[in-house]
Length: 115
Length: 115
Image (cartoon, rainbow over all chains, first blue to last red; front, side):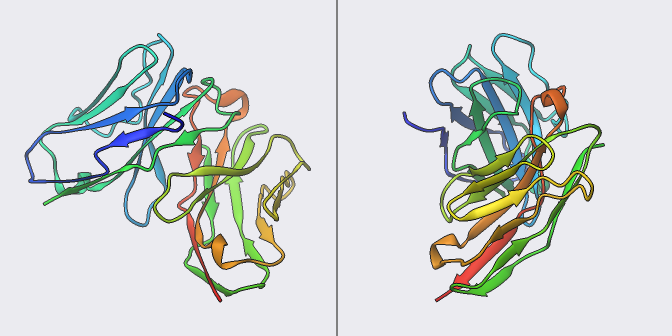
């Protein structure tokens, strides 16, 4: 597609359930990022993929969070045993190269609500 | 660590009013600086950027000047329109792109422009 695509756009789940969020980056973009945006807060870096290099997972808040990326294509962010504090908008972005002196292209986000 | 601080919102203005959204940063060396905008129902998109001191980024009537001496990158527009209603994010990229290649964002400032 023309832009970064994320699904689902909205997800409501019960506490303790697992959720998967999907990101389809712009074709040809080697770098992919996941951010979290809590209500009234800025964007919180979660994880960064660059080509075939090992991902930088330094922003993941706990071991309940994990992410995978298939080559330079789709990425999935998984949250296990969800908690209410996981409620947020999860944003995916991609770019031509890892050095963020360039522009990031964002998806519209996946809004997660944990009841 | 590196950080971005921007003025709290929401900001409400009448059409044709002058806009300033303040942004200051903390970083070692010379980061690149960005303003991203998020229109209702859309993903974040790059508005403008500046990569070195005294550079002025401009787009769609918005301007921001990279001020090393005051560590600031304030966003300005001389005459806002209703269509400028959005959330504006200031961001920095550490020199060389940083170890993660990610951007560091402020919390965002919501702008509402009334006709």
